[in-house]
Image (cartoon, one colour):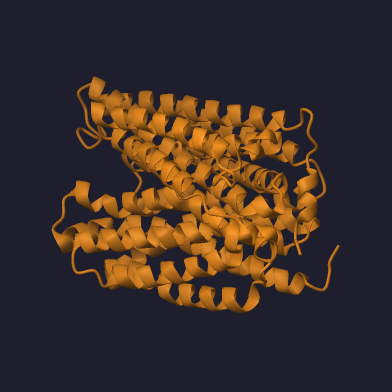
Length: 483
């Protein structure tokens, strides 16, 4: 059912999609410029890696805090501020005179991204009627797919033509357009007009969850390079911080994260399924370039084209999946997508698929279809299970699960790959292409595929579990589009 406010809602959808695209594109594009940064600043690999790590750490650690801040002060305010901070930080990145200043500016950029991504889903869900939520979330999936697809290729082109600074300067027109559009076109709905505005911000909870996520994400990244005791100590500290966070939140009168949200099976199962899904996806995304370039002998351009069907399939299926989830049980779509992903990942472990270009392309396309089937219905179910005054923290929780899942998946793949190579006295760049190297890589690839498929199937079981005793569309969703 379409109402008179839907044209304005459509503008909101595209502004939110622009912000999501900008944050995702920047991360993918910057990766292509890291070698140029390393040369420009005469930095070591370990130091220049922090251009990416600082961004992800800041983003992951602050998502929940800004999600709650949006619930208190209004999602639009935090979203608009995020656009402005990200844009200004991008300019500062381009003007950085040293690698240390660049890392500091990237940290500020991660702060802006956390403000944008923690409230983007809440802004969108509050702007559209319930019967259009799925297809609107499908557009966000397209934005992410476009960023993932265009980031490496376009980022490489920009870096080649304009240097590493060009990657950051490319954010300026998008950021200025998005900031102006957000101010002019997004309505200040939901919490900003409700009693939630009078809520107090849980600073202790914010500090604890930020420390917990940093202590979780950082060692997972470090474990990919070393199995020393340092990362394991940080993981132990993360466990203690998690216990402390839960204890504080249980006693807080206005907690950062309302633990009562997890009483909803749709919310709890949907978030955990998202974490497992992204871990499964990014385990394969990490392995794919090594496989295509060093096992299959493709150039970077050819490798990118081989993976392109994954993004194309996602862009084609996500809007359809979102629209269908508005009319049918999204659990069917989500489970179908996850099972398809698991089958495609298992296929990658087969020598016949690895050796046949057409089968590789088909497998990548199947993964894209699976992602498109799962993401919009799962996001809609999670957001629909949260009341209007908690929608910001609900979206931030889901975004946090995505980022942690990405790190877990990449770290898992890197650990399996490095440990397998080390057990045979090899390194990633040592003897690449030799029979011994290929044999070790095939063993590692098989292990990663099995782990990734297992995570996808477990996510499918969690998605199915939402049907036990809980409707697909909880009563909380009735407040969408709030006063």
